[in-house]
Image (cartoon, rainbow, N blue to C red):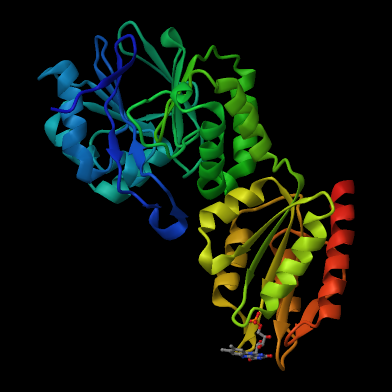
Length: 399
Ligand SMILES: Cc1cc2nc3c(=O)[nH]c(=O)nc-3n(C[C@H](O)[C@H](O)[C@H](O)COP(=O)(O)O)c2cc1C
């Protein structure tokens, strides 16, 4: 029988490991080692469950719950986020515990009704509302658009713990449920990856919410997200990192992303990289169709600039690059520079189109030069690109 994992006095992790998850939320976020869906049980006068898990894993969550409370009833279920990885097991939960009271934000109740149709007599809560369950009092804080309109977190002052749902999550799939078992670098790297691929478009909301939480002067010694490990040792470092993420804090770094059939655009990418990388600026080069899009987004987070290249195919850029530019636009990235480049045969329009789309995605162009190459770059062309890369590196260092 699967067991709960105690995380504090009378508080238990009752979630599941999804070891085989390789595409989180559809194709948008490939991951390496699976993830967890974290539900938490508070055993008090009113036994309370924080979130459920994906529907297919409901029985595992129930085993863990029963390993702690046997057949005792559960009084409350806090639905912090209506997305199915946290609420999918909710309907089965209500069948098992029909007398439980579900709590959600106003937006959360709306989404739950749209997804699960039946009204379970939801109780709506807003920022500052509290629920006393015995020795512990839960305080709710709405977090709209981190990551859906309904997200909220739950703070338990008596135990100095925040249940943060999607915020501060990471994909670490382990029975060692605390951050310190995995080391600071890994935890922050996974948190960065998660932020880049799930939370990035909501950076403004994250920055505002972090300020609001700081201003509340809450005593916090544990942050328990809905995916991955629980923060207890690296809370300060993680919150500082989140501030950097939310403000797109960057270093002397350039990301180059391209697509190329006959390697002409690839040669341009590599010449630019040579000029940049040999002049004191970190450069990462990715052929997009051969790379995890999650990695590209993570690397872009702290880069000052991105160069995007494509050959011209049937008079348009490569479909992958077009999709990538669409993704960049949706991420509401701020304060970064960019430039297009690419090779063509008989229609010299793709680089201009890449530049236009980079500008409409919020980037400032590094130069007015249009880096278009007719068919194969000569040695002279590549030397010129290397020289331009050198100039770009100097400019990056002054930014
Ligand atoms: C499938 C295909 C379609 C192409 N269509 C066009 C086109 O419509 N207009 C054009 O200017 N060049 C076209 N080209 C030529 C390429 O743009 C040219 O060979 C370029 O150098 C390819 O760069 P790459 O090696 O980076 O892919 C096409 C090439 C391929 C492979």
